[in-house]
Amino acid sequence: MRDLLVHTGRVHRWATNFVANSVQEMVRPAEGPQPADEALADWVRDGCRKLVSTLRAAPADLSCWTFLPAPSPLSFWARRQAHETAIHRADAESALGAGITPSAPAFAVDGIDELLLGMVPLRHEALRTDAPRTLRIRATGEATGAWTIRLSETKPQVERAADAPAADAVTPDCVIEAPAPDLYLALWNRRPLDDLTITGDTALARLWRERFVI
Image 1 (tube, one colour):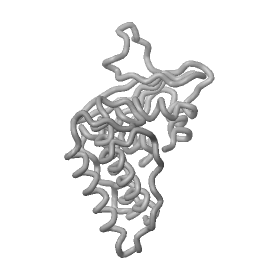
Image 2: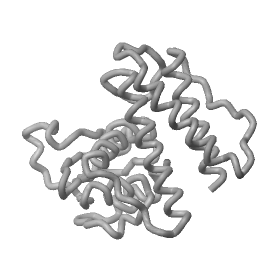
Image 3: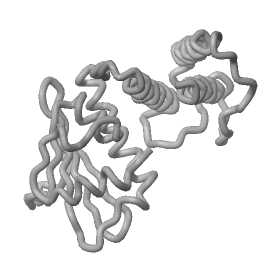
Image 4: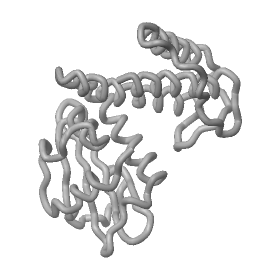
């Protein structure tokens, strides 16, 4: 738990630096002194409050370094840190063993979208198959979404289902679907994929579980 909170506090401060100072190149999170156990919770809260206030005060045309596609640097950092915090909240709740609080469905869909369209291309080396295969991810329930991942020996190709070519009527080799909050946690490997509905070639689901780890 201490390692998790120190990591989260450092990442919040790292992100704040890019936004507050318009930093144009990648810099690693500062190590700095670690607070004592009794001060750790307040230190994490202070870092989160500063991040939120910095994002709110930043200009819409903010220019700074980013590492995933986004409409703007400001929207990138707001989105990335929201999901960074949500996933690590799930980690903390998992450690407590009291159950993970589900995210709002629309927020979960957005997190799945960021993961599939942003993180998969960034960390593509793990997701390779000898022969071309297609994996469909589908969020169901109150907020919905669907994504197609085309796997092969080269870099995976990911697209939202609504953006897929009209001629693409091929049945996917595997479909993973669930309500968005459950799917969000499972794709981030914070809950078992076995709890979801998986149809078709389950080896593709195992490929995700075993190789795509962040």
